[in-house]
Image (cartoon, rainbow, N blue to C red; front, side):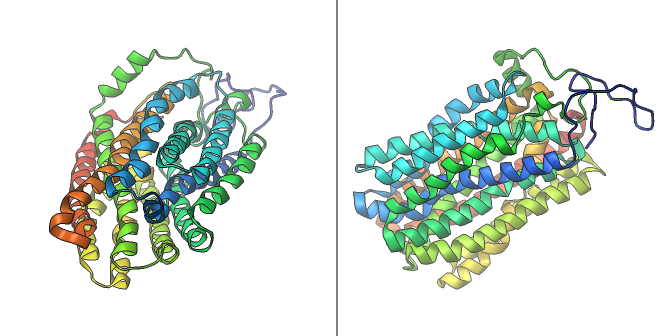
Length: 449
């Protein structure tokens, strides 16, 4: 990382030339600072997804306790969370993009809110109360990812951005894994309410530690590659959204990300239901076996995707998205075979490879989003992508999957969930096509910084 010893407003000399001999009292950032920040953000994102996805493994016990339909399950696991998460995402991102905003404090408050509301889920005594608590989790989590992506983009050079964002994205599979394993185990031993309470408490502690572990780069003079003062006039929201809409590549990425999330969130909930309902595993068994398998595969896919994008993107920028496009196309038929298996062991083994492939998009896609816009629009750009992924994906995926399962039950009976997953497998060809189309426009639209 290039270090500017003169503070955030100074212009760095070209490589190979001597720096001006001035003495600064500003803190001199070191290479360790981005590493500490990345590790802290990773832990935060792990808690983010642990609290978000634990409801997937607890869905079946909750259904039994409250006497819910599959449609109500889909509403609880998806739309109740996603609606406010997405509606608040853009205004919070606008706040994060202001040059005077401390994004570290914003993230700390977000962690505290979603952790407290996760605990509230365990205290809910009626289904409406549970829905309101899930809304609260979404409100808290809305402040995390756009601000985190903006922090990362300000702290690492562009050529390492895919890997850095992919590293942050490891929080998705790790958090989902822990949510499945911890949630399932606690549900078997103590009940689903205790599971919610147990995962919420550590998040409160983490929120108190965040301000001591990270510093705002804007204030510490650590913006990577900064060539102008960090303080900028904020772009009006209408102009910001208009600029994003004029990027054909950005629009394609949002569509691809939205469809990917629709399938991913839907499958995450209903594959767990399939193993519990059809293969008659307990929540604890499903959480352990499926959580570990999917979690390891997701980690591998997220990391590999970022590394491949940085490596091949140096040769040709379009190859930043070539990997995700090819991987998702190959994953579709393997997923269909996995859902068709009659033995849960065979099904789980077949799910491993396509889970790796479907996770490869995260780092490349979000790095491209950051590279398609000016620095002062990065948090807003990330929030629009998150909006597409969560309103379409998390909001509608579990809900529509549940509605289709209810609709198929008169014909398919206990196999209604399996029928829904058959369709989800082949729909994976749609984001593969969209990522490929976006890759063709990267060279002309991607900015240098």
